Structures are given as C-alpha cells and as structure tokens.
Amino acid sequence: MSVNNYEKMWQELGLDVNLHNEVLDYINKGFQNTVGKQKNRPKTMEYFDNVLHESHGGRIAELIEEKSKGKKIVGFFCIYVPEEVIMALDLVPIALCGGTNFSVPYAEKMLPRDICPLVKSTLGLAFSKTCPYAPIKSLAVGETTCDAKKKVWDILAQKVNFHIMELPQKKNAIDLHLWDNEIHSLAENLERLAERKLNPSVLKEKIEIMNNKRKALQRLAKLRIKEPIPISGLDTLVVMQAALNDEPVRFTKKVEELCDELEDRIKKGISPFSDKAKRIMVSGCPSVMGNWKIHSLIETSGGAVVVDETCTGVKYFKDLVDTKANDVDGLLGAIADRYLKINCSCFTPNNDRLDMARSLAKEGNVKGVVQYILQYCHTYNIEAIRIEGALKQDNIPSLKIVTDYSEEDTAQLRTRIEAFLETLK
Figure 1 (tube, helix red, strand yellow):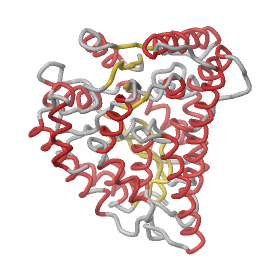
Figure 2: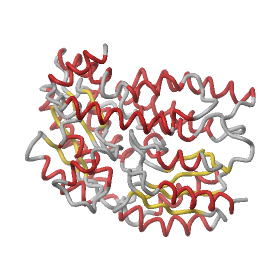
Figure 3: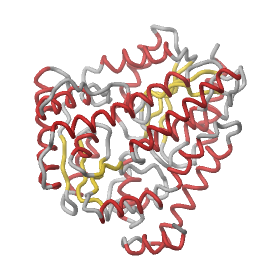
Figure 4: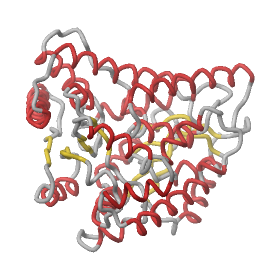
C-alpha cells in the first residue's frame, strides 16, 4: 500500500494526519540516528526493521483486514496479559505501549508531569489522535503493575471498553489463586467479546504457537551471548520490539531465520563489535518501540549489550506454558502459573528477580550491568539497590541510570557510561 493510501486509511480512522506524519518523522529520525547507523548488521534484520517501519502502516492495514473478516482487536499494555487466550477466541492481540518522547507533552496537558514517560507517551499518542491502534481496538486490557497505570486505567475506562487485571504483589499460594481467578475473569470477558466459548484444543494450539515463539527467542538469547558476539544488543532490541507487534507465526519463522544466520556468523567469526567491547547486561525498565536510547549509548561507547533483564528482554520469553492439561480450566491454570513467574519489580519480596539477574549475568559472562530506570518508576528505582547488592556477590559492578525518552541528557549519560565501561576489567 502506498503512503497516499496509508494517509487515506489514517484519515478514515480519524487521526490527525499532519500531526501523525510529524510523529512518524520524529520516530524515523530516532531510528536512523541509532539503529540505522550500525555497521555489519545481519541481513535478516531487514525484516524486523520493516516491522517497525510498518507498525503504523502495513500492520494497521492487516488488522483492518482482520476486522473486515469479523475478528476483533484487543490492545494490551503489559506482558502479563496472556496473548494465547486472546488468540484462542479468534481475537487479535496487539501491544499499545509508546516509546516516543514526541507524544509526552500531549499527555502532560491532562496528566501530572511526574509520572513515567512510558505511560505519558502511550496516552499522549491517543490524546493527540496519532495512535492508529486506538480507534480499531474493541477492548483494552490493563494491569496493576504500578500506581500510575492503575489511575490512568480509571480515566480510560470512562472512554473505552476496558478490562483491568489485578496482579498480586506476592507469589504465595493465595496469590496464585487470585491470579488464576484474574486469568479466568479475563477469559470470560473475552468470551463475551468474541461471542464464543474457549475450546481446549484451540487454546492448546495457540499456547503452542506462543511457546514456539518463546523457544525461538530463547534460541536467539543463547546465540547473542556467544563469542564472537554475532548481533548487537540494539538489533536484538528491535527484534523484541517487533515481537509485541507482529503476527506470531510469521514472526517466529523470521526469528528462526535470523538465528540460522547468527550461527553462520559465529562460525565465520563475524561480529558488529571489536574484541575489546565490554559485555553488558541491561536490567530494569522496558524499551518499547520508539526508544533505542540506552542500548545505542552503551554500544557507541565501547559496550556490547548481550543480555536484557527486562520486559523487552528475557522476561517476555523465559518460561513456557505447560500443555499437559486437556481441559480449559487446566490450561488456564497453567497459563496463570507461567505468567506469575514473570519477575516484575512490583513484587515483594522479589528474591526471584535477584536470583534471575545474577544467573543471567553469569550466563552472559557480562563485565558490568547497566540498570536502566525510567523516571518516576519507583519500584525499579528502589529495587536497583538490591540488584546492585546481589551482583556484588559475584563481583559484577553496576551503574544505575535514571532517564526519560528525551535527548536532553544524552551527553551526560554518555559521559557516565563511558566512565563506567573504562572501569570494567
């Protein structure tokens, strides 16, 4: 579809087309100044670049086509929302998080300035009529991982069809019971939306699709820590951002193709980095589509990001859903069990996340950890103290960076990152 036809599509969706074009120009400049400047990239990355470029064009056209066939679109804001349940009811899941600073001022016209940039960017796109996903979704699903989100959901629920999942803050048996109820409650709401009941065979089939997607990403995670490092952390981030937007079967096939190429690059000794690059793990907040700031700063300062202990990293794919059950209740229970294993900073105590960070750092043979904290994300910010302490037990130093989506602090951050990398052995 041509750009002119895209503009016609955006106009019919009720977007502010001129402002939307400004958003796309802003995001594309950010992409070209970070991802686009890299050398020696895997050829198969062209596909994932295109997923990002078409996220407001070709992907929207696909979703509109799905709607014309009777399917409904379900938007979500967090990786705690089980995509397989949505898919099993012939609905289409799509992530709605925003990673651009362009839309933040539009959110600040209504919301307080001192809340996290991810929430403001996401809501700013909707408020400024520059989010093409907003008008095509039939339901939005939020969760209770932070106070800002919870209060914003109250506002959004007055305007759109909204479902809120209460995520417990502990991981005891009573918490799993609550979470199991929340998964069942979501399933019942989705059944009403889809006007059909969950079928165990179809649900199991969709779980397998998501498990295959996770296995492909697990394979990528194992390859990126090899020597020589076959792919940049920035490119791996692009893949992860595409994971939350692309059709899952097609995406999985392309990740497997990328992994095949990476295995070949390892055999041939091809790497985007010199052998002096310092191996780094990024830990903390997610970097959603439109945000490549921290990875780019690290990798243009002498580092190589080989592990992401984030929701746009290992947390999205590290666990599979058990498929042994043959009934809907059993499968939903397995889904609840798998999703509660995600180690968000909202949990207390959160020793599982500390153990995971230590394990990932050792597996990746990292020389240091950059703790990436979005402004006003209090849970990740405070938990950084314990993460730092846990890593010290293995003599792995860490650097905490608190920032937003703007570029105002990039020079200062680069100085800090360069100084940190120089201290690493």
